[in-house]
Length: 419
Image (cartoon, rainbow, N blue to C red; front, side, top):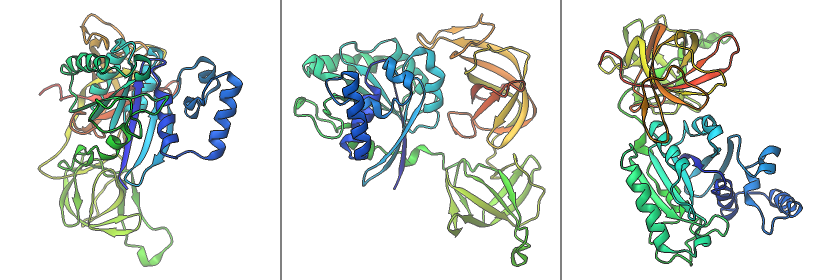
């Protein structure tokens, strides 16, 4: 079955964890002992109902404060699709956690409280979803039961959010009125909101089209390891290159080029987990066999001769700063991009982006925790990358502080500086 990765976002106490709990509960994706455990915990806390948010808020601090702090992953399946949910924090102090959890998502659920409408944090998360190039966005107007299921309230929030979203790059936007606590329009259609003619949330998640979101044009295969038999004499001539397809469709017989060497060769075979296959697409992990014995190692890139990624030591990118210590222009960091590693120095901070207003502060001298900005970097070796908007895999990277081994930033590559 097709896999859909989705992330939740929204302000504190908008009901993100409750919504996920309701999805799991109504789709019968939790065990009886899990339900009994949250029933006991809800009773001991004095809750007047079964608090489904406890299914995802597992940290003691989360349960005490009633907020999500860390990213919690939950898995469930329906007859039509399997799902991985990343329940991300809504508080501004944990923006980096939201970015981390949403970075691999195909779809993001942004939750708003129907009583408060679109607030600053709603706009912040919509902007982050746009920067992260998440193809599908669903705005869930939650707690409709607390505004008497009024269609007018929903329409006002819908209009307000659409006006803001028009300034962002959001390819697919859907807005659904729900009550996560009662289950209205979550799995089953609400009897209280007959004026809503769209699909309930789970049906939308099952039907949203994600197959065309992957880049199937630009062949990109970062080599992770070289595979050679050690003891089996019958396969002593076997030589393959393992890795995960990052873009395009690789077929047996294709002419390819290996970067950085520039040598051309042909694909003679592709081995998947179950044996030989004729073609591979993202995000399959496969072993590619080539016609010629070339000097290929981890970090090299296999692509098409006339469709190559950008190559260079200079890189412009948007950075989301993840560390307590701020960005230092001129400091050297370790950079990890696909399977390639390098050292990189931030040569300039072009501007800091205000995620609330989209204002670009060109006078900024550093990036602090949870802040986002555009930077220029200089690497010790050439990187083979695409713009993040074109390929999220080959367009993303991380920076690591070599002294502490802490991941300090997540980066999204832009067009090369000379273009």
